[in-house]
Image 1 (cartoon, rainbow, N blue to C red):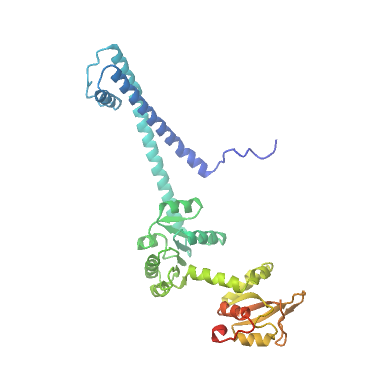
Image 2: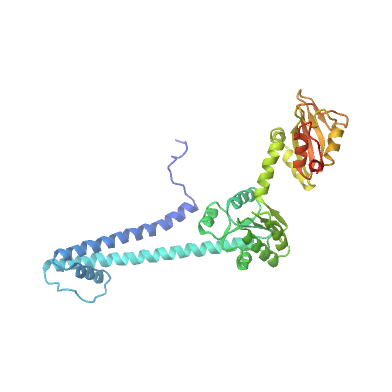
Length: 372
């Protein structure tokens, strides 16, 4: 008796109500169109059976249902034609009246919803201050929108493709349909009040143009731009971008890090504070990584002091976890690295150079390439 409602029970909400409100005029319109079309075909067939030409019959029915009153195409001089014409007048004219009313309802409702939607959107945009503007709702834009929503950071998406804009609107995001390369669109998005603008379009030329326009409209806004080709990075900086992100480069670098530091994810995953620690280190240009000392590793058997000197400042060792379970925090310079040790590093600068040093075989000689 007090169980959950049946799964097929319709949900009541704004979207459902809006759909029902719009669905009723649409159903009326489609039904009336089918009715008028049926009356037209049946009535035309009746005149044809009475001996009229098809063209005369169709014209007669058309002028009758539209109440034009140009007169009969041919004489209505038999009881059948009089009854048939009377039926056409009653059914056809009534159908046209209902059809006209249904069309007016649909047009008014669509216009009403459009005006309400635009007004509400413009009101929400005008209420934004210190927000982020995301140009493009592609693969990166989708992920960026999800992350900003989770962080409760106000943002607005500019998308020129109507289908993708509707997808963003369905996801609950504030969307402005327009071309971000146009200054008017950026002004409508509140570029003068925005704190940051993210150009994440897959078109380098468009990102450069948007960056130029945004910098001209708001010299104080922080601009983060996406670049596909490495040669675009300098152009974006010259256009006024504060940060340039190269997704291809980042992806390749991340895969390389996973190859060089395979133990990082598994070791640091269970440390609840690791996210905060890594963020704090990133503020100082540092990062946290974990490497495993191989049996024939270049630094296996070396002391901590020797390992750090070989890195020439690229990293320093903060903890060593032995295979037997012993954990050495803040190891001294005389502690030796043994095979199988998990070594937690604080890396400065290039993480790839640090990984190259620890992953190199013992016989490999090190030059400036590895000590960064």
